Image (tube, rainbow, N blue to C red; front, side, top):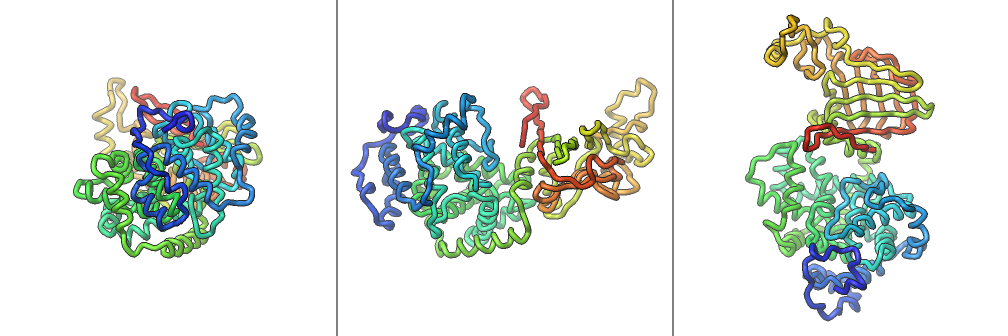
Length: 508
């Protein structure tokens, strides 16, 4: 590959060496069936320069909106948007997941360029609300672009495709969620063995399938994702379903006989996809994908439409999905809310929000007595678990007595059973009422902190409106105006680093 023309952003030590360029007949080919055959056979896969030229041709042929941002637009806006900020730490828009920006074979300049291009795309496409595949697409195309401006133009054309029969990239939360449901439908029909396994070992199989695009654009090694992209640019969205189903089939074949735990299934699939080169070649992956019979574009379209209607009726929203997506894996979390009336309140939450899935789709409470709620504006007030200030409301169980006696130092002469630790789960207490232990709950309908004769905090499914009142769990006063509009929600998560110290990270 001529690195004076392409590859400015590539770390060549990480890239597989390319072969001699074949006769570039594909550059003059306009027959769709022949292009399909060439892409599936990997005609341009062995030469980086030829692939760059083919990508440019295929993307140029995408029918787009009349006004689609091009390279000149990028050059005009990049300085204003990025300025002198450090590109390696440049914040990304909310419609992508900051944790899923792959580096592939990019050098340090390329890693920073991904963020610059995404920020400029966000500026030019204000209608995008959810597009988790975008970082991977930008990172991939940078390998085959002369500069950032060319990459920006290529990605813009993919996003601006206006052919109703050629769906490319999900750009709304509704489209993404319906595609996950569609993948689940297809898995149940075309991958019955793997699907039965997922249902058997998963608390929520749709939670597993919600990662299907991430398997392709995020977890796959670079030489695999380029082959995916080769056929995707020619054949469109439907091949992504085929390839993800093929990954599921291979996972079942390689790992199906091994014991799996429900809370690790997503991680197991991610690890398998990342290490796929140990068991499956790119050629075998494509061969398996296109061997799935009776799989039609019309079927996908009908399923997608039906699932979108079902989601619209349920009123599922992007803000709530993003809240749980960012919070899961962090324990504890600190929730801060600023209302439209400039009031500030929040909650310290002891338990990973992922625990909400243990009850399936039912709204149920979880957490421990470490949780507390508070307000900061107009005045500061903190409300902890009612049992801590009023131990007479809860008697420690015999199990907790034994644990406490074995771990506490009684040198001061006090009775260990008189000490109530908020680190104990509610199962350790014989509580006269469950309303004294309603710490946190979440579902597709709402988020609740504190319960019993009211809720300390209630947020609707859009995270736009809420209410607050006295509740039995914290014996609190309303934390702000009893009904309020959310101006800002911020969540801080904590996790252990190598030295077992808690490290805060801004989630939103």
